[in-house]
Amino acid sequence: MTINSAVEHGKLVAKFAAIEGVQQSAIDQLNDPAEVAAFKASALDADAYLAKLKAERAHLFAPAVDPAVAEAAAAAAITKHEAAGLAFGPLPTMQARGLYLQAHGLEDYKKTMAAWGASALNLVPGHDPLKKADEREIIPKKGDAPVKRNDNPWSDAYSGKDAEARRLSILRNSTVRAASLAKSEGKMIDGRPLRKTING
Image (cartoon, rainbow, N blue to C red; front, side):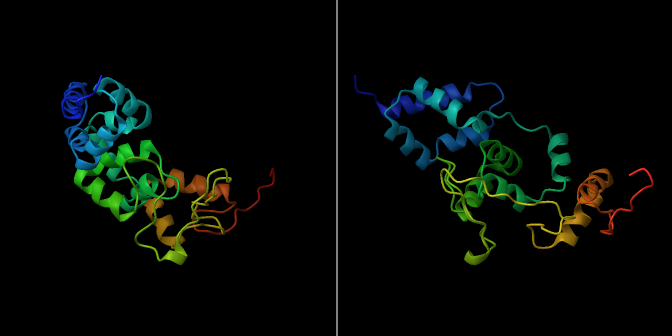
């Protein structure tokens, strides 16, 4: 039986919109021309494609964020650019994409994704648009061991650019976390080596 893709897409959007808690921005994304084309190319009916979305793109089904939670997240140490890196960078995840979509909306999500050279249809790693080609992180190839990054600004092998600025950012948000990160590198918060106690 031939599937009427236009009719089935209408059914897909209706079924998706009926799911409790689904955000309007996610519904809008299903109506995006690229999404419509992907649906038609799949040759699946509405139910089969909905199951495919649940399995492969769970972030679309994430409920709207409580304003208080969103405010707390905005006050956390991670910046918008760092969040974009987790969503579209060298090692992107669906969870990070879902959080970015919720926090910044569909239009910003699409614009940022395009800037990183990523796609909504897969998890192919993107490139940081703020870095020159020779400064970009190495994207791991399939089968390679994951690229290890050192995100602890108290470490001598810190992977970021400005360790001092990052330390100050963490300190402003949580002195407990700052102390823990410093201690893991054998240092005090101010960067000096930890003093050995009599017992240790």
